[in-house]
Image 1 (tube, rainbow, N blue to C red):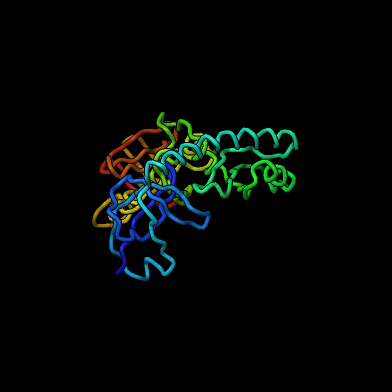
Image 2 (image 1 turned 90 degrees about the vertical axis):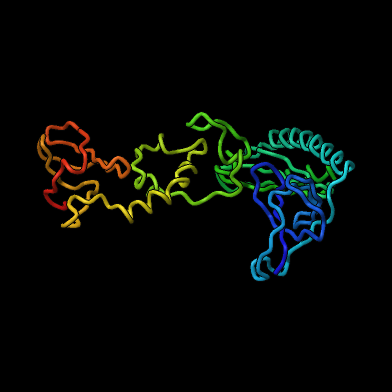
Length: 279
């Protein structure tokens, strides 16, 4: 068994795990760690916990130390330099007319590397840009292309719900989202209603999907208990107001919305509807 502690390097960033190294660590403490990018300043996102050796892995790096006041001052200076580096890179992009949109500039804590995040429609030849930036900053330069979901995470904004984007607020990683989730939850399949600011399916479709899937397994909307038949979208049914087709099933309210032959739609409780066929 090994002890691990979660470290996050920026707000809503991915959590990486390190060995607590016997340090007295508390939530949100600033810590200094070695990463593949170099020495970094991070924040404790989860308290030390024991895990199996196989889960922790053999390449678990230790937390070097708790951040000091001097480290905090250096972090603040790095952020100031990042803003200046962003402006310089933006000028060079315009000068060289590189087809890319710059999102963010990041210094590693030890200032041995600058990482520029950008989006572009396709592959970009930025070799000349890297040469000019390296001549100015005299450190390693890395240009990293990200997708539209990462772009929304970096830029932030307000979602259709009126709240700050989840990805920019607390989501550390993006979960796979599919159109099937919207179907299970009975949502409109209009792309403008189920797409987020990034243009992809909204991340919040995953939040309650497990409950909907579980309900679909345990409660299949029985027409009649003895026949074990179930309602589903597209099924032909008959009600007191005539025959029609099921267009929506509400498991929670135990009701179905039916499009009648006259073209109108109406909601009926399950007990008020009989099955015609399984088409």
